[in-house]
Length: 539
Image 1 (cartoon, rainbow, N blue to C red):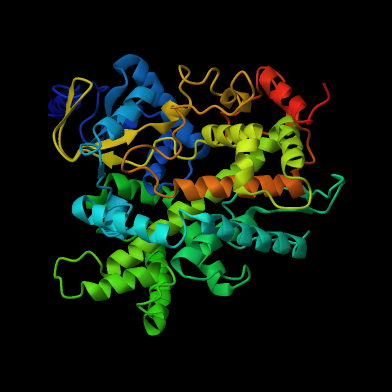
Image 2: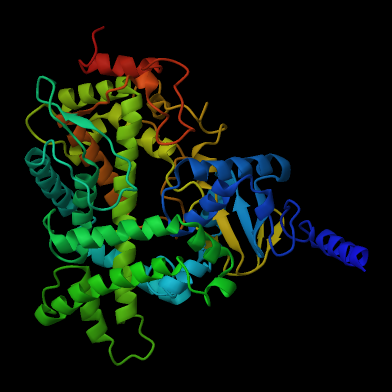
């Protein structure tokens, strides 16, 4: 009897092993678990699930992309993996990742049905909505943000004002501990750099930078900036950090795979949902304040504009302008506009610690173009090709969204000769584009000169897609690019990253994938030529 049961179990396992038929190629899977047992270790599973939150993944995310690139060599640029019972189509390489959302925008324009977002956002807001709701809210958000200045000169004015506040805060708190939003952030030590580039008192800019970038979004969504030491402000940022921290836990990751089981059970995974509700409560209090002082003739911010639209369509039973969409949309803008920028700046400082030669070249370009007195501005950008190249290389190598935000096909789709059924989840593997050896020679090296042409001018690359592509690309790309340039150039105008350890002894940052470049800087002769022409380097 025992042997008979054992044979039945073996037969069921054997029957559960299946290969892709009629769709994309896929590795063998085990029924119920999919490819989970083939992922080499827990970090891979964690990386897959963390991507659902839009969080930066670091080296763990690169491990899963390493597996995906191995599968690409075996199955091609389009293949399927199964996360538990759920099939996921993975797109690898610059051609596939660009072609799907751009050439077949309608088909690949859906958002994947993720168990965690279904529990938190419940289909409301911009980031995780579908169909006409998504189109309506995205169109409204883009129009409103443009009307509020995120497409005109006032965009730069908002950032410059906040940079000035950050400067005063760093001067005030020089040498103090600035923590408070959670221990998950990586600390970077910088020393104050005077005009003569002398020594200074070390300070940690991590939390002030995070609060500063958050305040730019506050001015757009709430209509005002908040003081860095405001307790409500710090509490709200703490909730955002706690949200990302909870996405890292194994319980929440397990919920993402097996929601039918865990949604009925108590456990640590429920902490994430409690944190999300507290975030909504914070925004709801701000909305209530706006309702009291609302002037329909003079909208002050995103919340005012949304409330006015709610009043205009209050008689329409099918309107998408309601309280739930307002709260979720406001939080979506915060996540998209704050976390990605502050994380990239933090990674940029870590990378520059490792490569001081690049820091020196950027600072020389700043001194030549901007000088020591005024702050850098966006009109300086065309005259600073090396700085622009270094920023692009920081974004490429930091690769904070290696798997991209999961999408879904909105109808039965043919792609690269494969049939993809309606509703299938799709991972556009951004890492495979940013680290494509056909697009970037020796992609694991940090080489800003790859974005310079033979004459030292900045050169764009069609494979540079940190903001994704197509209709689901990040709507805040213009804001993010402006912030990254203005913040980093100001920081390097006034400060220099420093560490008690020599660069050779520093750990690879921001992940184990970062290594020393094969040649010393500037490896590209045009970089040295251009800097000599501008007076940055001796001939």
